[in-house]
Image 1: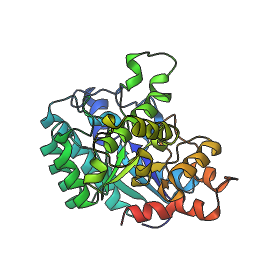
Image 2: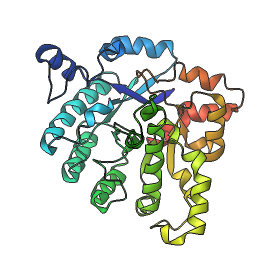
Image 3: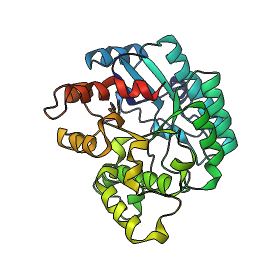
Length: 318
């Protein structure tokens, strides 16, 4: 894959759209679940490609919208949902190999089924990876139950985009002011980083390719305090044999920062070689001109811009 790649984009599968428009429901999901009031979710792939051209994006890494996780349903039902979504996205990637990179979804509440779908998705369908939630029904990824999954993901070189679905952790305190999204998304991502590091997952599986969506949440800002806690309270270190900041370069981070100030801070903290282009298209909270934001940045060097736009993701997908 050459050219500019946006790693953080979503798609509402046509199999879902057709079913709910005809029958009103698809595996218990409705039009409201699929956010069909956002007209971009109804766009044809051809219309999407036109928009990509306008935005100077060569390829979209497409994952199903987060509502299609459906970890709360019976594992067999979620597995069916995942297979249909994955087959549709894989079909688009095969039809437009220079424009679409496929990421699937998985029935993460059943690790045996999730691992099998990961194998099938990458081996048979040709997907490049998968998008997963920050937790599975409240269980964080440091739990040993996920060990077989990490083993398969590492062995196959799966690109894993971590992206929250509701409710986020902030909703236990308040549901006001859109904080569940504008703050909650970022808190959830920070907890995921902490659990993967503290739980020793990144040490046991050094080949994992994990991208923390939404620029890693509050990780860049919080990591110094996490280091301080690691140094002052050894009993809480968990399985991490190094301070959390030493694991920053084990993850990738997308560019949904919304300002050049925050983007520069992200690059300074995690390293420019760990930052990849991401917009959150076609969500209302998407970065409107992701490529322009990088190209016009007054603080990024030409080398940093090239890395973010295409070189870093190219290395990750090898």
